[in-house]
Length: 197
Ligand SMILES: Cc1ncc(COP(=O)(O)O)c(C=O)c1O
Image (cartoon, rainbow, N blue to C red):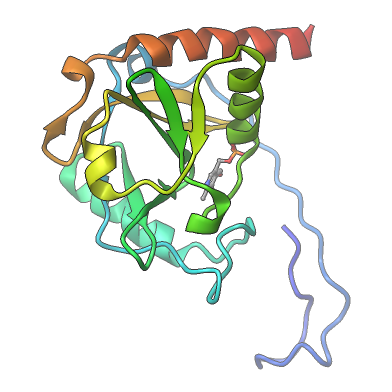
């Protein structure tokens, strides 16, 4: 974390000390196997993602109040995560993950201009899809498009690729992780293992 420094209780940064750099480390435990084997349920949050004109969502800042509120909505309904819309009502991302859907074997993810954080895993998945010649479109996704998809999953460095089997009350891919999602996961793990060894 990079803070704006130490100073008076004021919004002004004029008389602050230099920025503080804080590094927190934590052991990364294995995620529960059921996330990947059974898939997870998500909701569409009422809380919207901040727009580029407010707290730019492409910046990984600690200013996550909207995401915290959206995540609380998910927790209240027993869902794994909440998917946040932008001010136009289009899909942006999960509260700490990027979002993907598959329709007719084509992979879709919203573009950065929809207002989201361009995650590292998202970038790696795009590389894999291009390398493997799999059909892929980075395009605006409406809530209706999303709920009509064949498969969906979310991506993040600490979560990997997590299949989604329900969006609000809509069941996705017969309530099981989809075949295209599984295929991509295999390619993703192969890439990670190659990078480690
Ligand atoms: C809002 C948001 N979007 C997407 C991601 C996924 O990014 P990455 O793949 O770099 O972990 C994160 C990760 O924390 C996030 O907080």
